[in-house]
Image 1 (cartoon, rainbow, N blue to C red):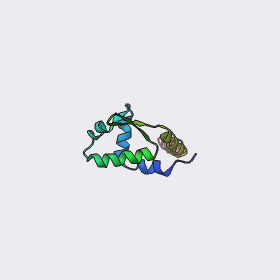
Image 2: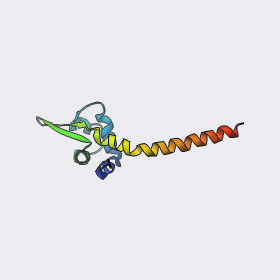
Image 3: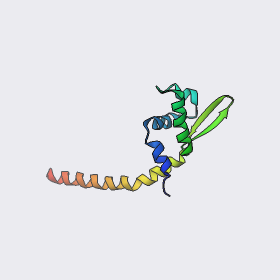
Image 4: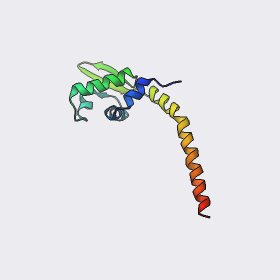
Length: 105
């Protein structure tokens, strides 16, 4: 299954990757997330919107708070897409290790 380009675009930004990392520990309110960043709340809101539109987070309104949760599905798609490249490099590095081992003889 091809990965949505919006997912790659969302992951391209380090602040958005950090938001996802923080959400690994569980859902967080937008205000709690904002305390972790040296940026204005409107900027964080924009990052959260991008993540939401890419399907990487969900938003639930609880009273006046907006609580964000990680959605792993798109990340699984990225991992599946990257898998052949990982195998490619593993094969190359194994061949290099074998060559270096031969040189030590």
